[in-house]
Amino acid sequence: MKSQSGNALFLILIAIFLLGGLTVLLSRSGTQTDETGDVERASITANEMLRYTAALGAQVQRLISSGCSENELSFYSNKWTTPADYENADELSTDVDTNFNCFVYDTRGAGYPWKEIPEGVSNSATEYYITGTIGIKDVGTTGYELVLIAPDVRQEVCSRINASLSVNSFASDSYTSAQPFQGSYGTGTTVTFGVAGTNPSYVVGKKAACMEDGGGNYFFYQVLHAR
Image 1: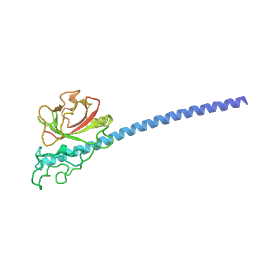
Image 2 (image 1 turned 90 degrees about the vertical axis):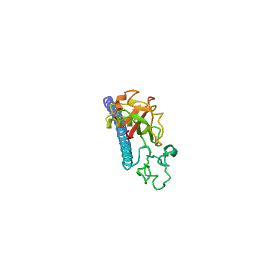
Image 3 (image 1 turned 180 degrees about the horizontal axis):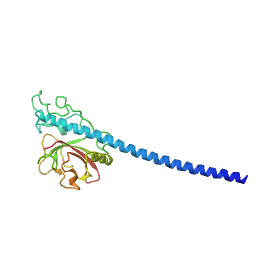
Image 4 (image 1 turned 60 degrees about the vertical axis):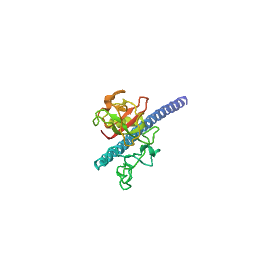
């Protein structure tokens, strides 16, 4: 009788041990699944933003090829939080039949859809930022570029972006002095990526990349028009 009780207890202990092992295995599997899902989501959102911003640059080039000067380009849209930030006096002529020809987001111009930053890309920002007061070393010649910025991008998304663009790692610089584009470009007092900061060589000649802002946050830039 004692032998049977001992055997039963032994079997119960084995069952408890196996159940514990199975629980640990399932927990690890669930964690790995979550991590894999996070990587896949980061890749999807990164690719979505890269496609949209690259196509936006193509539309800018189409307008320039159609006769718009680089100063006449307008990114005005009433969808911006502050639409007046992107009003371009050079394009607001008195001729109502022609004064939308160089509008990127208007159907009378390029007709490209205005979109917010894809969900899951940024920690805090919802809108892109377009400026003519940033240069990138060895992109274009000596002028400051027309550049789109996505602020406060999640690090894992930035890592996927740089991997897909063959950018070795994060350069560090700031764009806080950049002004919204209203038809004019920067002077010698504005920032040029690829010159100062940390690891500037990573973005030299790169028309798109993710960078660190010097404060532990990340941002993405895309050149829409090189000068």
